[in-house]
Figure 1: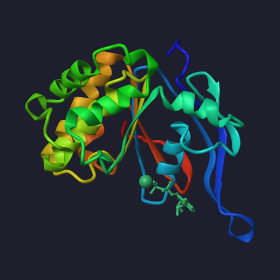
Figure 2: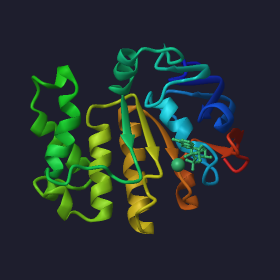
Figure 3: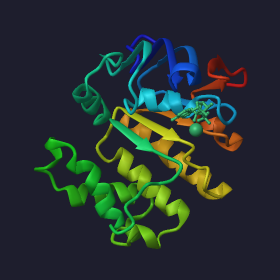
Amino acid sequence: MSSKPVISAHQLNHYFGKGELRKQALFDINLEIYPGEIVIMTGPSGSGKTTLLSLMGGLRSVQEGSLTILEQEMCGASKRKMIQVRKQIGYIFQAHNLLTFLTAKQNVRMSLELHPDYLEKDMDAIATEMLQAVGLGDRVDYYADSLSGGQKQRVAIARALASRPKIVLADEPTAALDKKSGRDVVEIMQRLAKEQGCTILLVTHDNRILDIADRIIHMEDGRLAAASYS
Ligand code: ADP
Ligand code: MG
């Protein structure tokens, strides 16, 4: 691919703990992810997937090596720079992390309020449109609490994509869902990402959704290996 990567890691290492308890969680990670790519990361529990994803999302400080996100070097980055980078990324976690005392629309709207350029726009209309895109046009004013698991995860997708981020990071987004809802949510993510031209990095244990990926990578004991079945 000719365009510049949106995420680029070189000889990235990461450690938890101090002194004798220090334990290395990531070893010599080298990875480039390009604009518009859908990359799925698989690997056993404890292999370092969440650690790597949180570094790539600017949610954790880089300790060693180089990590560039949207052309910003994250090793040694200030808190301010990390916050700037985070605003350009959408996050979807296993637990949907919706605010249950807000409606679906209010949850999506909140993510827009972080962006100064949305404050003058009709954020309610944008949030409603996004909820329609994930098939929840008839649930806009329902409290998050009253939605099913699959519906909540679709609200989380609408929230992550509403501000049209360049990168979406998803950590086991289908883990709490049945087969059909799991499939539905990743297909919605795939469609919206292709429409918006955004890049997706998705961690999953779910073999049934691997086919939506452009590329599959595999983590094992803190090391990255390209999967052969991609
Ligand atoms: P995965 O997401 O693949 O299950 P993680 O990235 O959560 O793996 O964890 C990788 C390794 O790092 C595991 O050995 C885990 O115990 C350790 N680890 C993760 N987070 C922390 C933390 N906050 N403190 C100490 N060790 C951690
Ligand atoms: Mg994890």
